[in-house]
Image 1 (cartoon, rainbow, N blue to C red):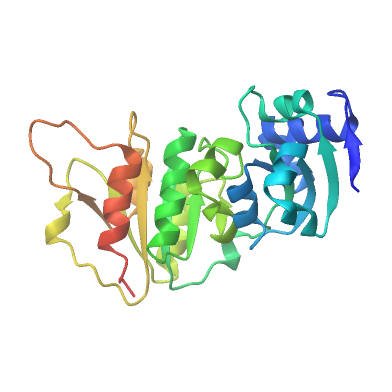
Image 2 (cartoon, rainbow, N blue to C red):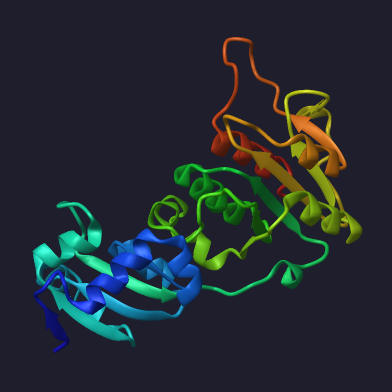
Length: 259
């Protein structure tokens, strides 16, 4: 039987909570924390699992939790509440190794999604999920984006952040310039001085990168200028703009067969 943890102050619990709360700690430890049976099972397909915590109730519902080849701990409900940060939880939590990939590990003629200052975890997670669904090769994040391995992003991505290469670059315009040097066509999503999507070619044999900014600020002028062109999604006058994850998903669908 796995070791039982009865104290909220246990070092293993504090470690997991810190991973959940701190992006800097996740980066330092090269690890991340996830909650929920389905999410943990999905992440385990692509990321090595280091530690799993579960309640007696969760184990009764899913005995195969004991099949994971990692450290295992049975936790009491009040300990699970601390791990979850709320009273309502699924009773399954895990620590995983964080994938390590650099910008220069990316294919030089792939399909990419680049995000600039998209702070909302739900939007970042949904866009990573859409990128995976439409066969893109990687997601590139600028500083100021929500951490791809934060709990809220992981939930919104439904585990796609584990199997989709995600890299953070220190300067997005420089990253775009490098992609263009590799022959990748980079297209900024922008309202002004842009072409309607239905007038934009969808096939790019040398690769394409869709570049999206936050809902509030959009893309910086420097990032737009670094791209080959700007595109927009035609919408009716009764709506000012689309949610970032919705707009991004439409663009990703349009360029899904770019190569």
